[in-house]
Length: 104
Image (cartoon, rainbow, N blue to C red; front, side, top):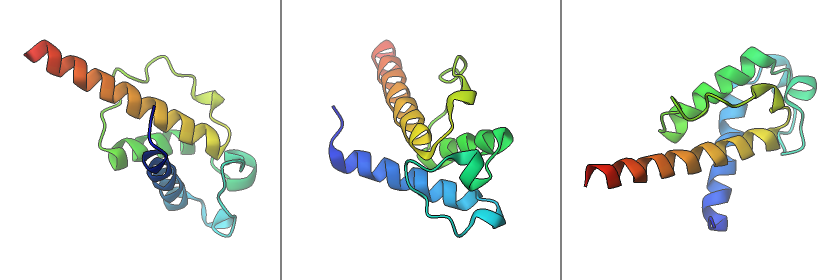
């Protein structure tokens, strides 16, 4: 189980990345987990993809092979992005540890 501090850091990182990519018209909206990406922040499906790619860079993980079967249409709120990021970080950590084990 993740420690609360790690979880808070992940959430802060996700919120910062969302703030970076916001369209100008949405810059004054307070970003909270319940905020809807498209309706309240103006982030459409291409924006979600940009967001995911930016998170990949910010988190320094390689999502290739990890997110292939993920349905991005399910990412509708900031909380969805946080949960996606948490899951991808956990998968990347498992993938990294299994690759280390295989190399031993």
